Amino acid sequence: MNPHEIDSETFGRLIEPYRHELQIHCYRMMGSIEEAEEMVQETFIRAWTRIHSLKNPDAFRSWLYKIATNICLDALKIRSRRVIPRTRQDVSYVDAPIPSEVADPIWLQPYPDELLPRDMDSNLDVVLVRKEQISLAFIAVIHLLPPRQRAVLLLSDVLEWKAREIASLMETSVSAVKSALYRARRTLDENQAVLTDGQDNIAVDEEVQSRLEEYVEAWQSANVSDLMRLLTEDATFSMPPTPSWYRGRDEIRALVSKTIFRGSADARWHLMPTHANNQIAFGLYRIDDKTKAYEFYGIQVLSYKQLQISDILTFRNISLYHYFNLPRSIPIET
Image 1 (cartoon, rainbow, N blue to C red):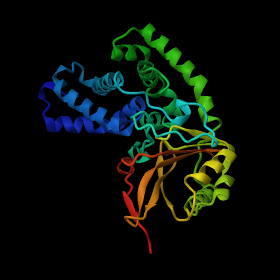
Image 2 (cartoon, one colour; image 1 turned 30 degrees about the vertical axis):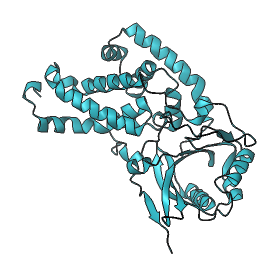
Image 3 (cartoon, one colour; image 1 turned 60 degrees about the horizontal axis):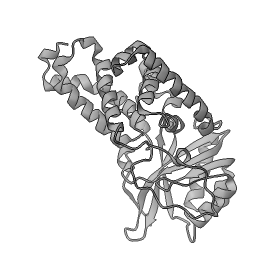
């Protein structure tokens, strides 16, 4: 590849194989699928305008990562840290008023599994989508880190770059990289166990599939008792942009009884299976009496512990249906 002889069509073919891995990197940095797409597009634009400055064509991939990482770091100087309710505030209780929604763009977003590499045979793809490094718990913890520490940790522990390579990318010293990496790993160790709390990477076998069908039926029939039976004793529940989160069957039972399953709630909800962050997920829909259809409500991601649900995290963001290839609305069957 001669950078001085590349036209726009050739450049498009060169960058396309890197789109998904760069998007995953930017998602980990930004915590938002929407912002990750924005960062990747800006990366490609900036790379095109600077292609003639690429001195070593063999370093094309690392050059793209340098551009993408710096674009993310620049953006994070003026954008809020992304969180989930559990990393934003202390546990909530049903006997307290439900707080107002926080509409600011501070909430983490789920990442569609459809955008993860499908070829798991290459070492690169295994590194990129290793379950624990795309899980919501991992994403939530790394967003406790300052942006530069986050970048160093991702480049080192996820992409497996050497300290000198990271130092070159970030235009700093090897000792500064090692210091940042030490602090980042310490924060990770201190917080990840609290968030994962023994969560399992779960394969969907016949038993799990049967329980998922029971879960869907419990939601769609608004059966609180059946839903509670599927949860761990200390399960957690949250629905950002409402900032509160709840722990334990008793609290969750009381919460859903007075909110989402309140009144005549049979057939109020509809769930459509999907996957996010290498976890079981659903597109959640709510009936709309005006449109006579189920309207997209958000993406619900489940975590498991010993075949029981340990966390239900529902991202109430209407724009997410597009990224998960889900319908905006579903007609009610008559």
